[in-house]
Length: 345
Image (tube, rainbow, N blue to C red):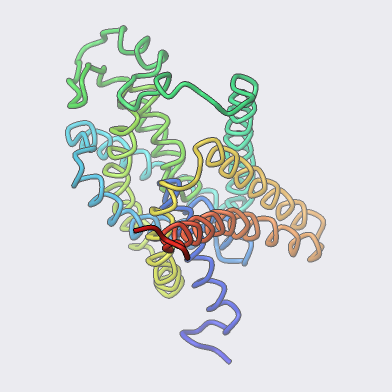
């Protein structure tokens, strides 16, 4: 039985996967295409279609997030506009590289290896950060004054100290060289176009650490720049017929509800848990893609099944943990709001 050209199993998979990715997007503030693209690759979609559909999904999920940050004034429009230009150039270069690699028959391999290295490396950094936090504060009683969203990291301040003209004034304060902005944005755009991710999980750290903006402004500006670069990437791949609108639509249906739940969860789950959850998810996703590449090399379907389980299962597991904390928190609040049986006057 097929619906919209897909089996019932795939239809349910895409909607439920979209829901879970939506929870993760609302919680971590990242579009989820870094999970969508490799999943489509494992399901034997061509590399260009997997990448184009991943970018289209990222664009769709970004619209709501940008509106939210716009309402609370966390977007540097000048910086976002500059980043959009250099991101678009990087995405165009990356997409041309993908089509060239596809003509050589190695696009899936190169994309898979890039994912393994990138996701595994970032996941390891997050887990290392979580371990360092535990070592610094074993009792979990950190000083709240030590962390301030308005602070600029030391490396960002150092980079800003090199005044290589032309310099751009940032809305959030300070100045940054156009060369720094172009280098950071162009590199992220190249990665986005090459492996089919919106780039939020590398773009936001680049804005925060390299360009040197406060964390809240880095998140909002990253989403703003990613919205337009995602639209450009979707257009680039869509013009060549490399966006599967059926798959993207099903994913977006599921993510619409999931994103709202994930956003609400950010006020419930501890920050240290966020770091651990994200690091684990990235490492497991990296392992899943690595097994998929090994399965292709060995020509065995058993490892492919394990790789799908790791990739999809990691997002389901993390999203489930987030949902569990939301449910238990809401349940606890309901219990607290119940009047005492022998209430006083």
